[in-house]
Amino acid sequence: MYLKQIPLALALAAVACAPMAAPSPAPAEPETIAATPPSPVAADSQAWARAVDEQASRLQQRFPDATISIAVADVTSGELLASVGALDEPHATGSTMKAFTVAAALAAGVGADEPLDCDGGKATFGGTTIEDHAPHGVVSVREAFARSSNVAIVRLAERVGVRPLYDAVAKMVALPPAAEVDDPAAVLLLFGGTSKLTTRQLVDGYAMLARGGTSASGGERLVDPPAAATLGELLEHAVTTAEGTGKEAAVDGIEIGGKTGTADHPAGRTALFFGVARPADTRPVVVGVVVQGVPRDQYGGNLAAPAFAEIVRQAVAR
Image (cartoon, rainbow, N blue to C red):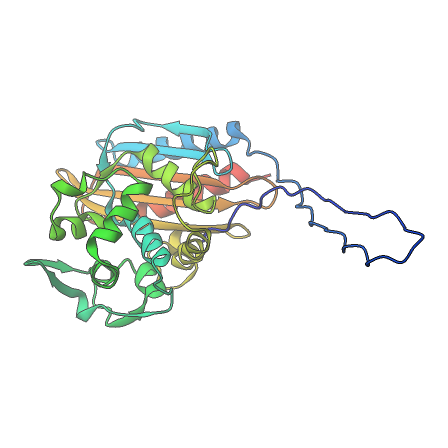
């Protein structure tokens, strides 16, 4: 349910040749590598901490029995800037998992504008019936992602292959060993129906995608850069389009991309939103909001996404 690659610092170099008295071959053209403008300064961790604390307090007052975890991390360095709650306790991911699955499908050659038959909002895979919250018909990968279609993930698994898709996602985030998961169970994990991760794992995963698919150290490529860039565009579309489940995360004047998630919880619902905010004057950050144990009329789109937006607004206000 936006991400642009982080530019690499390049040196400016030139090759010059000394003049020759006798005729000689023309000197080689000087090699010039355009310098990249300096990266914006790091985000103000104190501003983000104040915004996170205030939003967590508001959410707790509104839902006294809810379990809340919020984290903010610098995309460039991976450094945690602010947090509340238990970041290392596994919880349902809901559809926030789809970002990794769609990134893997894009890396496998699926196009963002390829059509997917979402089959009226219901599909059967290996004897398991998978449904969408609303019927979508035939839509592009881009639109299916924005609308958070579960059936679309089934179609991607059929197109790419369950095992290759599962293996690619397992390189990005922690999944059960492939040998312990049959194909129907793998598809459920891939669209977020049964997957569990920690808030920190999700924040780190979204930051990796925002960095162009590289690990925080820069030493490991987890997603092809073109696929990560296209996934970033899809995340932005999920926020900017009227039919996107993340539209309540939009903040005027700031580039936002992200993905909602909603999952069942013993006390009702778990509502999630994980996204990237790119303020004009600081480095981009990932913000993750998870609220567990809220009434069943609460979702990622109407609870976690607006909370994300309020945190961003307060943290970047001048």
